[in-house]
Length: 414
Image (cartoon, rainbow, N blue to C red; front, side, top):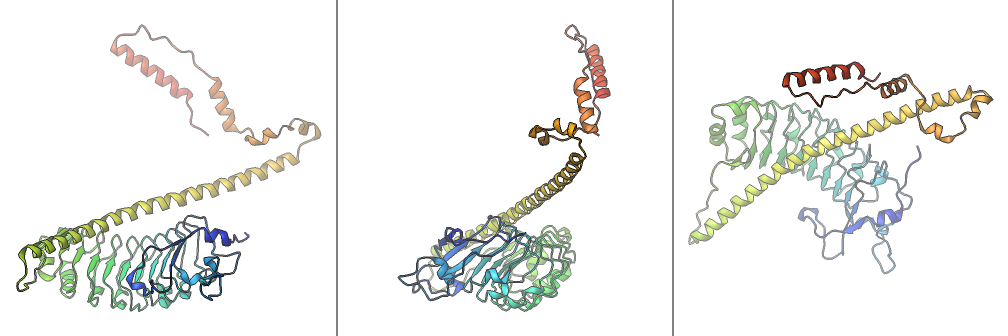
């Protein structure tokens, strides 16, 4: 199949200025002008190939007419909801300055290609077909990584990513968190809806602040409390949907060994108040309320995001099913066409005269099923007049007779 190339006009029309930049991107947004996002989501793209040559980075001058001449100004690339099966290095090569890449909702199976993005800060590969994490070895710059809704079963080959702070691996088939220990700066881990039986490998994640391992198979209270006692910075914990939740000392045991402020999206202890000399009590109360509200809203956002991920997963499966149906339909049509052509090749001159009308080919050739349908449509029983029937038993008896007679002629399709 011939490659489909993205034209320069097509790309230019999908570039838009970024209204704000993340602090962690380390970009001077005041001295070098505007930066841009290239939005290519839902464009039925199967490959990142271009019909033009990207600029050679001579900087923006009075002669610069198109942004494709200065690809270093593009910090965000969104290629989600397409038909990509890979991230070709050649297609990503122009974006040396890229900070955020969203390639979710595709059919990507590996990380190959992202090694050409040395400044990448955030990578979203959720809702793809990735099975292992070994290909991340050349992604040391990543700070945020979303691998939710994939087919990952093993994290043991997770490379050392010293800058990673947020990792989302929910809705996979992971049985162990072995490998997460190679992420020394990890602050947020989302691993809900997997097959985890333990959180033992989080013992060395001393900077962890948010941990969600809900809906797994964790059942040993002692092992959980032992790990939590070592995570002194942990503030939010989700463990609901695990067998451990049924333990009699579930909440009390967790609170006694940790400093978590919210458990399973519920505030479980008041915010700590620092004693500051000459502090206005009213201002202190307001600050505490504001912080509590901030945490409550953050938890609601996380919970809603989880539900949205589930809905997206459902829609993705439905899209794949529809695509498969179309492929099967096309295969059937091809088979029918081959049969039709073979049939037409056997016709005599006299028979050809009878098949002149081109509309003949817009309908299927007669089959046994068509004959049965024709028979059923022509066969109609005489309708009985029940207008004079009043008695309840008689009405039921007449209805039974009608249904019995209907079933005798209502054959299943062959």
